[in-house]
Length: 86
Image (tube, rainbow, N blue to C red; front, side):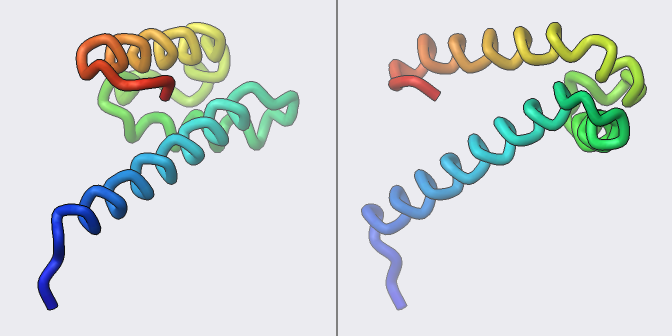
């Protein structure tokens, strides 16, 4: 079966959309009042190289900074690649 460029772009867009949803959910869980859910989100965030050195507790304590850092990265991506809102 041959794969066309158009189908690759569609698949790529679906993947990007899926990751956006996952990232949004992860940040929301980090901000939850439920300490266990927030710590779980902090542990999952440690897989991101930028936050790998931080403990889950530090990530929960700095959750506003983590969200601001993420928004800054998205705005840089939009500017660099000339794409719409992420």
